[in-house]
Length: 151
Image (cartoon, rainbow, N blue to C red; front, top):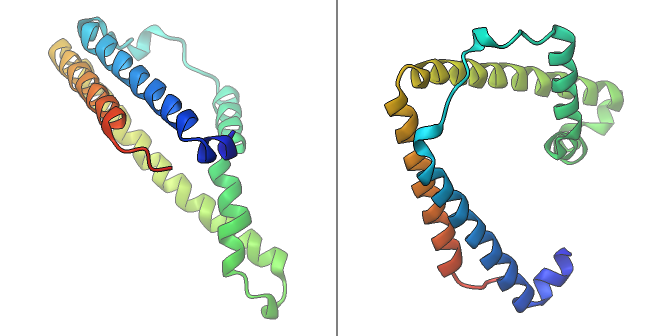
């Protein structure tokens, strides 16, 4: 599909305009229904089991192409083959990468939880977030539709 799109300006334009139209549609729908956003109170849902959380994390991690890219293309550049123990070096680099991701993702999770609690405190805030999100999507869709056709 990528080769067809890069060679055909007509296919590229059709995909671009379809994507732009979809973004505008999503933005308008978000704007129209901005007052309907409801955040469920965490106490109303039964807590997920640790096993389920770990399984979901594993599934997301294994299906993320970014991980494959990092381990196959990026980390191998930092291996010193003349030092020997290439597998050990890759394992150590992988552990460092996983540790950095754990700290970073944990920080984002805590930040998101804090933002959720703040937003949940006011229906007006939730409506405002939806209004801004809808306007941004419409703006991105219009910009996409009006930009050049550089393949």
